[in-house]
Length: 133
Image (cartoon, rainbow, N blue to C red; front, side, top):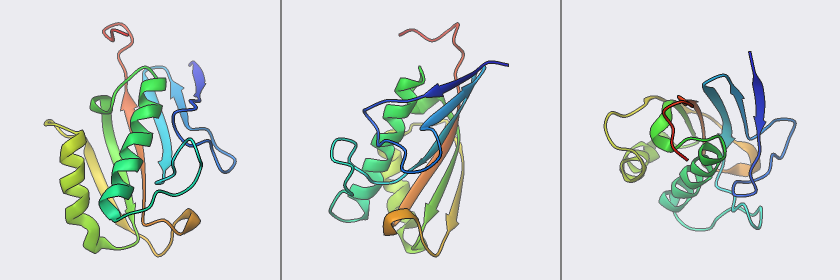
């Protein structure tokens, strides 16, 4: 087993005792991302769609630093403080993902770090031999 810690300045730095991602062989475990601007480490402003886009942009940056792309994600877990935002998640997600889509769970929670409305974590599989940088 090979274990590699993934870090990139293009996504928010960890605000706790965790890594942005951990790669074990061909599997990459991406830590939960919230709508932080990676340059300022401040929360983005705007409606929920802006927040969702920032989260996917952050996940994309970590995926890229891991040697992959969002298309390599096989499982997403989305945490929402308001399940009424479910349809907006679907709409924004369709801008970032094309079929076949990853497996996904959406979980309603009472609160998230920094009072954000959404957090997403992911599992990605990268076939290093077929990936072209």
